[in-house]
Length: 603
Image (cartoon, rainbow, N blue to C red; front, top):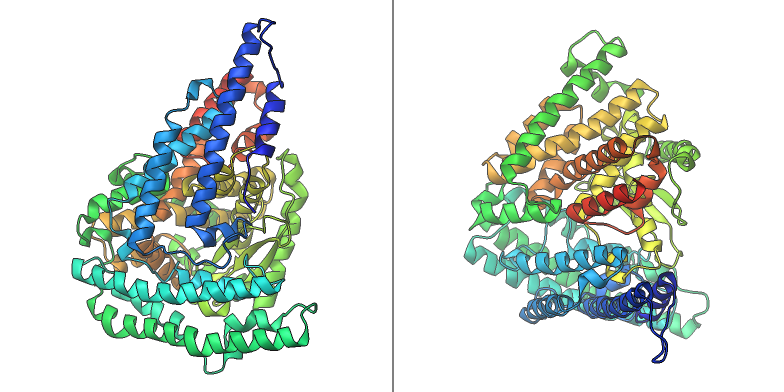
């Protein structure tokens, strides 16, 4: 299925008034402007959709995740020279083409979209100056993890028809080739001294070893065989089972074993002892670029570090107020220790923890209509993180629902260490990952109908994580933090995001060691040590990404404050949320322009 222009263009033309003119009847000035907007809007939408369709062909796994199944048999050549050249040409060509369109002649909403389109192409071209391709894997995110999730038959890859099963077989063959290409790129990285820290390599090896089964039916990639559709004939089932078993045993497991062996015998000895990008060639500039990319700002690394220090100090004072409120006799560090260790703050089993989150979900859902006009059609479910990645995964995460509504969103809880999942942290975590955080923002974005597809399915970490952290703040007004311990959980999560500004910049720009970063987080929060270690190693793997949360939240809060001051009694919180949620994910500067125009219109 190709994503066409017709439905979007028709909706836009209707919204513009559907005016027409003839050669014998003069057009009124307002009508002429509408006709011009129709023409330029149609031109822009056609360009944006054409780009998106070409992009999906270049990124076939992304296409599967957004519900376009034309390329389900392809893995993509995302480590080949040909792929990088095609990526460059795509972005360069469409940047030139879009600049030929008269932005001023577009309706306001499409001017917003135009700005996003230009921003995306420029950022993609800027990214090319750094050797990201030499670091194709981390313990936190990689094509291996993605393929395991797809192969579980519980993700975006469809397994309903014979063609679906053939497609997956072909995609796995492409993935096997990728494992070989990854080793070649990492060999280049060793030569150029662009390598991962040793501790991250040590995390990757057991992830790969966990996939090395002796019997095909023990592999997670065998899951599609365990759920073969009843409509398949006996012969078809036998043939597919035989083909998948042979593929797993003779091709996939040997490829993953070769990759694991490579990491252990070749890459690990060459890996670096340092934690940050400062130790890579041109590493400080590379890190600054990553910080700008993830925050969608031009803030300097030093400025971000200072904001982090200020926020940590402020939140510590708020935490101490809670300590006094509940009558705890020791100091704040003793209060942290109490919250980390006393049995009443933890569940005894993973099942109880998941059930507890279901109860939090019900409590939050009751009050959501008081704060939102627009809510997602899709629901979400709470599930434990899969066993193969639970030791290195974050404490929680969110996966978007299927585009066609066939699968709900998933709020993943890491149940590996129950003492890393305190009861007092559940409300704030649910607000962030589920409703009204990621589940609201991402699901509503996917459900939008009258915007270009790149806007519907694209995203910016600063906006999306900033919104989720704002959702935690909103929980205060929603009344779900009436228990002081739950409010402390909110402060604890906010502290995590503030510490990230300090620790991420500390490791990548200020020569902090991994151990320094871990100790800083121990000193300033009640987080479990296992969580702190996983967090620090995540920042090592994804430089700059963790900066986006607090930077995004602070910008949203500042814009809300600006709107409240400017509009006074006219300020409508639901309408403000509409402005943030109904045009998709935005770069922060574009979001600010939009809110400024909305404030002016309300006045």
